Amino acid sequence: MATLRDTRLDEVPITPAAHGHSASGRAVARPRTLIVSDVRLYRDGLALALESRGDIQLVGTADSLENARVILAGTPCDVVLLDACMPAALGTGRTLMLENDGTKVVAVAVAEVPAEIVACARSGLHGYVARNASIADVATAIHAAVRNEVNLPPAVAAEFFKALAELGPVVDAEVLTNRELEIVGLIDRGLSNKQIAQKLRIGTATVKNHVHNILEKLKLSRRAEAAAHMRGKRIVASGMSGERRGETNTPAERA
Image (tube, rainbow, N blue to C red; front, top):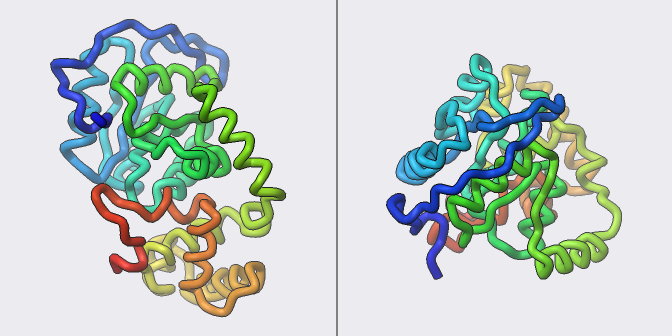
């Protein structure tokens, strides 16, 4: 089955999309969009395809959370298109939303299974695009996000609500603070307490206190167990599913 990444640019349908509206209610004919992916070929291809449509205003591309922050610090943006296959993708999306009020985040190349879609919803993302979607679907998701809308196919919607019912009360996401979720995500990426402290610009002792609180709240004894636990729960700090393009091993196994 062809995927979004297999789409040839000369086969991209160029069709106008409906106008969206920003969080402030203003009309957005061409939503300002940033693409975030660690695969250059993918982000450049998406950028070229979206620009060719004429209804999306591309503000830039970034290969990491850090570079996305730099762009967003100086450029207004309506929507961030986030590569769901990046490590700690949902944690990245959540951070960008927290730091940029009003900016929507849409995950791209999401496996169209309830667990993945529920993970996007629980992390606060404003939409998703399935792996087998078209460029037109990407543009539709961008405009929908600006209008605070999410399009779910009927079959997926049914499974989505079923999965939500089976999840029961959301405990972990409420127990851990945003900072603790961020630290779990960095632990999952293999960073030491010292590296986390440098990245977040806080003291190592502060990181250790956060880790202690995380383990206490989750009733675990090791920091690696906390990362594995949250990854299994599909909480924002873990990324999407531990899968990478063409890989089946987990981030911990790849480290």
